[in-house]
Length: 593
Image (cartoon, rainbow, N blue to C red; front, side, top):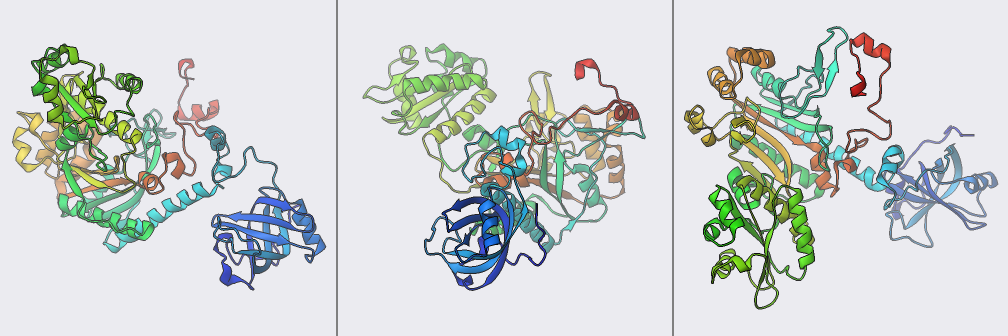
């Protein structure tokens, strides 16, 4: 039977006690990590979110208290009162290893049955089982530290923005469905049958309206929702440190955010960041790294060898260039012993799986380099390629030939894969701004230019002349912040001129009816005086993931979804009873069950 805490009130957390607390009477509360029965001596490791402390029960302990300790098992919830004393046998592996508590009063607040897995910091328990019992998994110290780190990031961010004149304003969670780049989660309306709210993918239009309302510095830790396929750094619901500023330009927004990260790293990581962060154009990032979020902690840049091989006897190279494509390479230095022919065959299958037709290589182990296409090359051509690439004995060269988008994305992915295998990535933090994004991108399927950003993104002034004549030359006043190859945030300056906004809608081939249906209220608002403004949203979850050195957003999210967007613990999503559906005017067909 559980005991009440009458007369006992926690005075200290388990992990906070130290040698200087010896002689103090304390009360601690927590869960039993383990109980060790040595006959006339019982030890209990008591755990709370700060750590573990040892409780000691000896031959001088009250008999009733000793018997309670004897009956304790893992995950029992206890309150213990006693005197802190120095341990005779110290434990250097825990922060409280110099002391223990000689218990004088023990209360069993709750008993526990044997859990489906042991609560250990380092566990090899199947993740699916742990997620099904997430409330138990969250008792483990590594996950608790991650969740606490996330909380600290949120607090420091709020403090920073408050100190810099921002106003925290909540925006609606049920909004009008508008195009944002991913599918909306829809909420049916009971009152307006046949109509739906959408959960916000971001507070984009509301924060722009707040700028028109005169709140020149807005901040919100906004919950956002996107119905898209999951991966390690993506959840269907996430938190965005969302901001918008008036009477500013790009440099002002970048500077305020650099200040935020400087503050975060100083207060949370005790590290000094150098600012300003490096900036790189979108084109430079794609050309050199094959990614718009490159990890620049290591080199291995992509190099263009199209001119060298356009007339070669190797048809794969020559035909790729002839058909308007490209031939490019990366050099994995000192990797010839690692990348055997067998390993290269594995990489070939890998690149085929991500869209490439194949992988050519040069592996230089002996005096004469081995090459997958050597027999097609004329005298001196291979040497010229090696010299141009700066490849030397001991290196491996990987080459892909195809249309440009395929080549860059393939080599960008291969670059990361090789760097991880060769242990080339230092354990440092490298921020990078990606700027000068193209405003439009060409869609091969439709044969049309489509927007890379939401339709309120401001083009650079010098590019306005090309909106109607040459979309490829239009550059957006947009910017992304990346850290170690992960995109942390995205933002832009916004269009405030109603005429330019209409021109942008027309460039995106939107009809007046579409414009009015999707954005009518915002277009109307812009007629009444709009300040120049811009903003961005930072993925709080992704920041936490990187600072915690976690492998997945699941490790920094209290109750995450798995890859099929379900939550294993509560078994959601779930079916809804027929009466609830009828009230909403919704029917579920057999094909959709």
